[in-house]
Image (tube, rainbow, N blue to C red; front, side):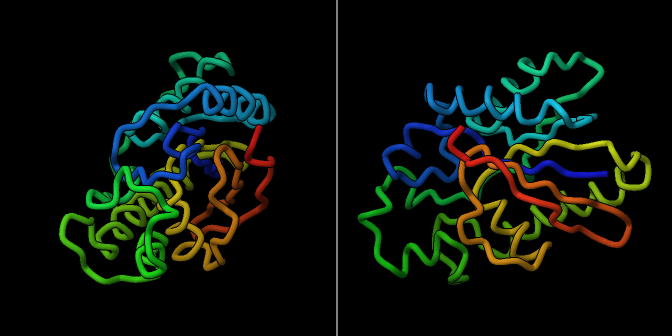
Length: 200
């Protein structure tokens, strides 16, 4: 089986360069258009299940894809809190350009320093890894090779996947609506390709 991993469409916070974290920011019109275009790119795949973060920007992206592809109720859309972005409460709503280099490193998961109000990096990584370990254990052995699970999530989650599961650098892999095709079997995870320009 394969996982089709993607980040949600654009929000106004993305457009303005603001930190989102778990702030429940909806898609803007560009983000909705990105989600519709992403659905067109996903059309050739045999999607059997969709997983999404409960945060509005990810859930809306998944809803648009589900509707645009005409997937019926037999293709479930499952909301899983394990896919939520890391909680950055002290930073949420702040402009990235106003943050210091050390604060940017902290947000990009380079610095593991504990900070009041921020979800500790080890526990954030653990919940993300737990989700993908569940997928491997519960889905990989029961699905066929051509079956795909679509996972709609956030930049921070993608960083964990690339750094801790795929053992790859994360640079330039967090654009909105880029598709990361990952093969999964009982032995592990492997990136097949990343495609789409992320701008739709």
